[in-house]
View 1: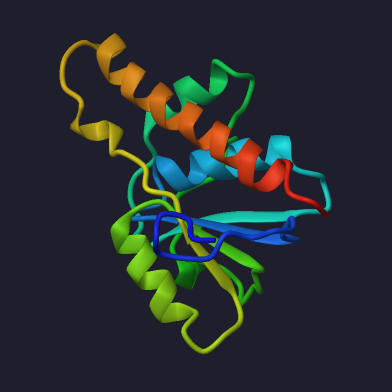
View 2 (view 1 turned 90 degrees about the vertical axis):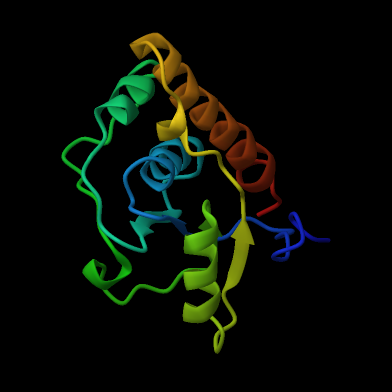
Length: 153
């Protein structure tokens, strides 16, 4: 079964998950925080970007609304991470998906693409912009619940 045509869908819960986006500023750290809260404590969860960006305060605001926090976590790239092994790499942007496919082409690591909108393109009031971030947060929560939390162990 395909997950939008760009990767295979897991049928069991992975033990180590990496979430990737373009700059590790919005989508992947948000997914990491949500997954850490939703999945068993023995699940290794991390996030990284293709490039390193600057921390986004809107991410902190929408995570705080649901009782989550990034704490002191700062954006990082794959190069910043130790050589960790992941069962699953979830990519959230086309750029990250291409990088993950290149990175895993000679390994047995599953790569899934979960296309997420870019909330930074939203203009308008602070509330309108926060609404775009909430939409991403809620989409990620739903996918993590459906594909990872409810997956058989």
